[in-house]
Length: 240
Image 1: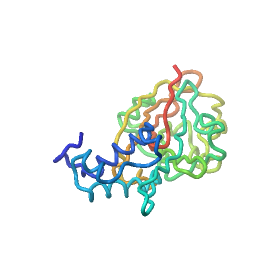
Image 2 (image 1 turned 90 degrees about the horizontal axis):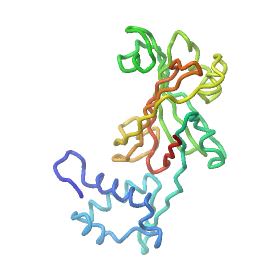
Image 3 (image 1 turned 60 degrees about the vertical axis):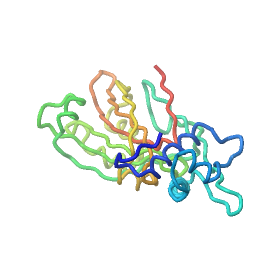
Image 4 (image 1 turned 135 degrees about the vertical axis):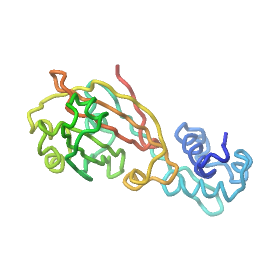
């Protein structure tokens, strides 16, 4: 149902629902979106609102308007991303992508917030290193992550990540040869401005969010992260 007077534009709500329907394969038999008049009647809005929603999906590359024919679905298959005891971006995608890349967007050394300090087992007032990173597959933005690391143990991790494009390889160079996932929480949210820009999404796009803690093999926390995935580009599988 479309909710009015919620502060979220109607066209954004409609775009979210059409995006979900595309991802669910609701239109696979025809490969086309229903006519604008049909969609307008379905959602109880005018055609201009439907056009705004379709334009948003076109900007994301999900659909393409063809004059005299209608709106064709241009969906790419979602990547399957496994979440398990050893979650790694490039290894997890395997042969689904011929090229993966990790890019450092920003780094800073700062006092750990209470939430970060608790997750990393740090004392109040201890420092952490924050990395903002972007992961791509075949040059397509997949996720944007904010990662925190104990500063006293991982000095230089930002530079190593910038060189290697991999948290795993950066850890290896800092003496952590293996690590495991202690916990993962999965949620969903609307993308905010920075994520919209870096993930090349349109306003109203939905993100899948993983909040995770990784530990070394002795069980000591080494990374606390919040990763935002474009919901139309990935689906999670959880190996427990």
